[in-house]
Image 1 (cartoon, rainbow, N blue to C red):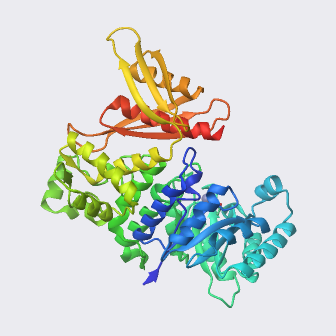
Image 2 (image 1 turned 180 degrees about the horizontal axis):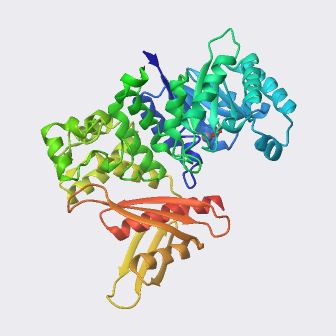
Image 3 (image 1 turned 180 degrees about the vertical axis):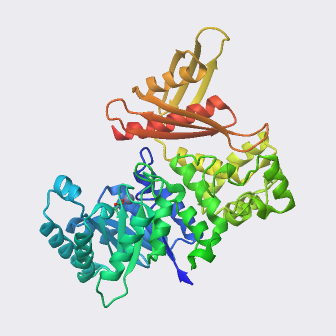
Length: 504
Ligand code: KIV
Ligand code: ZN
């Protein structure tokens, strides 16, 4: 059976989702989970983009044990050198160079002629090859590129030393028949003494990213690029979990396999959703809450008689509801540490100590601590540790008529406590007005969502907010988790406010 390599770009293209900003610790945590999930190649970032990106790529390069670690680079020497510096200690480093080849990109964005683009590919892929064994080249906006010129650009990259050719549908413009046809055309027409790996990279603007990736595989691509939960620029990238399951469930049709450990899928998705702040829609294929729920009587009857009547994927196959050992008030440190290991966390002694205190506090209020509760608790702890200003206290004065009042205190980076009091039409508005006063800003609250982390009366609340900077239009997201809805709301808003402050 053909083996399809899975290339994950959650930390690069996925991080290009508006409002998504992973810190280095979160990136390493996601990378380690991706390795457990069976990802073959991870695009850890764009090293030249910022010092933070450089450090994260370097840290992942030094931690990955099995995965190939990739850094993105434009066709510029300084990008390639920076990627080399970040990746040189990786077990298996790879560079991903790209240059646009469509007429609209060359004319308006690059202001380069076809001849200049070809010369640049030759020069920079050649240079990258002097530093890296594995060089990938992407003709950006390939799906809107003239076919003959696309072939010329790809052939130039191969002649200069690239052995991996990625074909991006940069703006999500293509469809399965057309996109598959591009692979067929390139594979039939390139000339090379070496084996060339063809890779798909699709965006979901027309809702066809997964279908296009599968069409590429049908037409000879042996590598698929995408992101967990399909996050990414605009409508996002191919959702890798969808491709993994499609190949598995329809092995009869595709005749391909992968290294993906399917029962790590839900855990991987949950982690990315929590750390990115992008919720997974309930009806999302494979990992949405409703994906395994049967509502109609006819369906329920059928599933009870034989699950295969309406279920093509069993929830356990993708790791849904694998709450093997729920913890409770009487669970000791040993059981807690074992659970952390089972969930894939590697915490320092100090972090474990802090997490155990939080866990005990939670267990006092909640009878059974599920995996979801623990993941939420650890995410909350890790986010709070990296925050510049932390929530100290919230006090609300409620009246069933008229305005509500709130007093909020925060501790800033110097350890100074600052207090503000404000009124609002509702308690949450009063709290948010007080926080705005403390941060001295006035963002627009674009989204406010609240949901229970688990079922049951004693469930914790998870609040997600999105703030828009009125001037720069930048988007900032925050998540707050707590038993109390008001406290969770304050935490989420402070998290997003901290990020906004850092950008000023
Ligand atoms: O969508 C795209 O074209 C990209 C390239 C950098 C590969 O993300
Ligand atoms: Zn992309």
